[in-house]
Length: 379
Image 1 (cartoon, one colour):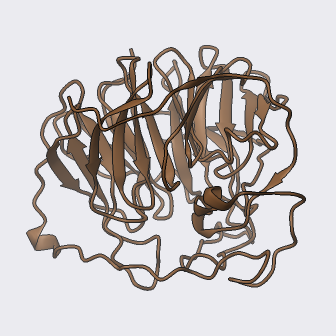
Image 2 (image 1 turned 90 degrees about the horizontal axis):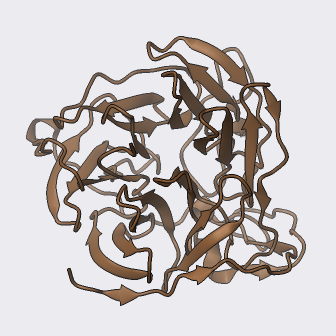
């Protein structure tokens, strides 16, 4: 393996927390490079001082005609890495595109790809179920994608009209889905996509957690409190089950706190952690479980590993260069992590002991990479 770069992991340290405000940005991740301290500013007009940027010019990709899309995904092998890399080919909707999942070996050498059927918008939130099936979330369609270990796609399933973007697997077989969006805003000045209202209501979502049976039946609704993220519209965007499936740990994308909920007694718990002004955590983007229950959380400039019981930062890793590191996955081997950059499509494999980047790849798509996972599932 060729070492490309080395990053020194830093042990957790106590630092004073102070207020920090990040300028509103497209998908909020580019703000990391110009974080500014001080009280929040009232939003201005698109592209104006203190306000969200106008939609940035982007390159619209070209997907081959459906008749020419060849699936080359191979049966899953231990160590295989999977990346959600939708082809963003709709000039009128910056979240719409042709669903695609790429397959790499453990050293990020390409192995194959799978063109998805039944999705209309960006796919992400990759995670392996205990039975080895790869799940992917297409929240704006909204459907759930399942890929069998033989590399073939199962028929998509629609569990709800709500925009589910994460799933956690309960020990009893229950499926816990996080609702990605909340509130009444059907759009935002920094993006061109539009969000659908829930049938018969004037909201795009509530930002709650929903427990379903394996056959899809809704079993319970948990009315979770959520941070909302920088734009106030994000709900429960990443979830990790803790304490043998009795407590849910979750975040709101681009927020600054780790929340938790008591699933047994159906009650909100105090925040597990808040990162007010901590320079190691400019924002929380995505959270995934580690092989020992740790919380792997991307923070745009890198990632942190946090304790699921206390929220304390155990290790933090800053990746030099521009931000955009949004997708994160812990390796089952307990020795590596995989990161994906939303902006430029870069993928890295990092050794946790010393922060060395031991492998690199690129998915070939900008503003698309929204999920990464390594096979097999944690056992």
